[in-house]
Amino acid sequence: MSDSVPSLAPDAELLSEMDSMRAQVETALAERLEFDDGCPARLADAMRYAVLAPGKRLRPLLTLLASRACGDDTLRAMPAACAVEFIHAYSLVHDDLPAMDDDDLRRGLPTCHKKFDEATAILVGDALQARAFEVLATELTPARVAAEACAALGRAAGATLLVGGQADDLAGAGGGDERSRLEAIHHRKTAAMILVSLELGALVAEATGEQKAALATYGEKFGLVFQITDDLLDARGDEQEVGKRVGKDADRGKLTYATLVGIEESRQLVERLVAEAQAVLEVFGHAAEPLRLLARMLVDRTK
Image (cartoon, rainbow, N blue to C red):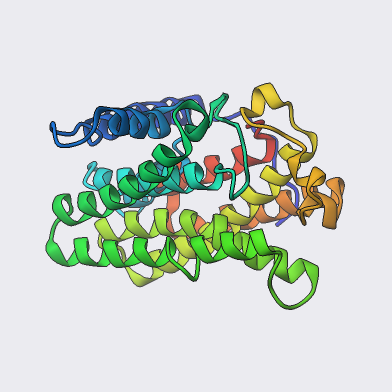
C-alpha cells in the first residue's frame, strides 16, 4: 500500500449521516445536563457552557461509529458517547485554567474561567467528571457492560493516562529521547481518550476480540494523527478558524511534532499513519467506512 493518502472527495452520504449523529449527540448531551433545583443555577449554566459550545464531537462520534462497526445499529452506545464527552469537556476546562495552560479562548469563545470565574471552572470540571460515571452506571445495560465501561473510562481519565500525561506535559518530565517523551505524553493526553471512546462503543456492542484489537490499533494511530495535526495547527493555523490561541506552544518553548521533526515531516507522518489506520479496519468491511472517512478528514483539518 502506498504511504500517501488518496485525495478522494468526502462521501456526501456518510458526511450527512455523521452530521445527523452529531445532532443526536447534541440533544443527548443537553438532556443529560438538566438538573433539579439542588444544582446551583450558575454551576448548571457553566456546565452547559463548557459542554455545549460548538465542537466537533469527535469522541462521542467515535463511540457511536465503533459500536455500529461492531454490529450494533442502534444508539445503545449514546450514554457512553455522552460520558466520554463530559470527561473531555472537563479536561479542557481544567487545562485552560491559569495554573495549567492558561488559555482564554476555546472553540472560539471565552474559556470557562474567563466567562464565569476560576472557582466555578474548577467545580464545573469536578461535576462533569461525576456526571460521566453516573450516566454510565445508570444508563448502560447489562450491568456487566456498565461496570466494564466505568472501569475503562476511569482508567483512561486517571493518574497514569489523561491526568498523568497532563502532569508530565506541564513538568516537562519523562525519560528517553525527545521523540519518545513526546509520543508518551501524547499517547496519554490525547490518544487515551480516543482509544477509550472506541473501546466503549465496542463494549456496548459486545464486540469480538478481533474487532476490539482492530479498533485499538486504529485508535492509537488516529490519536497520534490528531495530536500531530493539532501541533501543526498551533504552528501554522489561523486563530479565528482554529477557535483558540495559536502559536502558544512555540512561545513557551514546548516540545511538539512541528518543532521536533519539522512541518513537512510531520505532514508526511500524518499521511502514513492515516493510511495505516484505514487499512487496519478491513476486518469490519463496509461497516467501518465512516471511521475510514474520519481518519482521512484529519489530513486537512483546520480546527
